[in-house]
Length: 348
Length: 104
Image 1 (cartoon, each protein chain N blue to C red):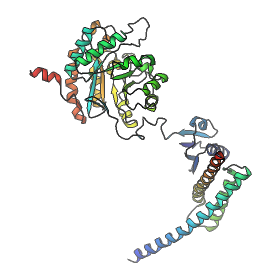
Image 2 (image 1 turned 135 degrees about the vertical axis):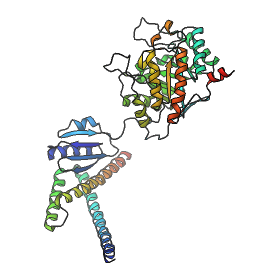
Image 3 (image 1 turned 30 degrees about the vertical axis):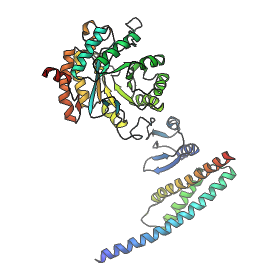
Image 4 (image 1 turned 45 degrees about the vertical axis):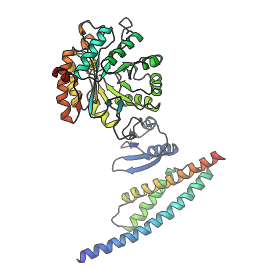
């Protein structure tokens, strides 16, 4: 920590700051400059920077170390790679998760799963327990929906990710899903995060709609601290003053998270934009910016979807997007879906 | 060639001076350690700003009388560093004391 004193700080002010830091068990290195005094603070003691900032004569307090530890690059310099069967998340290959917002029927799940598999997705998404802004909106099919999703994923050799809204759902979802998703609204549900830290399945942790990168990484820290090292971060848009889109997709999170953390970072352009015609450009940008993966809403019949139809892509649009991503990824040394099933299908 | 020889000689001299400085710093640190023990027994705080100010004033005065290339502000900055280390010695000692008291 570095304490910068005000230009006109008195000797008494400086002395009081040094005295309290020494009392907290810190070593203080005082540097007297031409116009102001800077105190370098090191040591094992615990100091709340805000308390020092409130003291007379203090201009600002700069923290050097990060409050998160396990999620940080300092703790683990190498990228985390999560292996789920033959799917490697966080490696060179960009992994695409796709599927409907909610499981609605057997036919819908199967048709959508078949379509996303053909286009090159590796993981099926789909909700059975839906966190809706309104209690009167469709709330999801519950366990019946999980069964449909698992059957759809198995039939098309896809892994399955689905959202867990509450700790009471962990057990039942664990029977069907390969990855637990924590939604944006639950990013700071610390009791849920703590429970998920005890599980040993990967967690897809979405960024809260008003969360800073640091708060997001601290939420990941809750899961990591429980012993579950497989956390995937997912940017899905944040609240800004702009109302044209549902959220503002913060692509700057990709290079920033890559620097601060070793955890894989995914991007959800569907929720980020809220309109299907804007999903593809942002998906392309996310891959170009270095995202480890995407999660995209695709529906076999979006116009009749029970939730989020407007942001769900048609299978044909998703096919085209995947073809474009296959051209973009190699430009930055990545690959995407090494064996496009679609191409094999056409060859036959 | 002569200038090169001269450089070697001067560097030798600096090495010899450094030996003296480090020995003197060692004596100073031993003294500061004893001061720390006494402060602890007397229940006085490790950081005593008035004493540090007096040390700085003293070394500035000694330096001013020498009239060399090092100005008094520079000497004061060097001494801030030396006193930082003295405080650290006293803190580590106080912590060891507290730990041993904890064991008893």
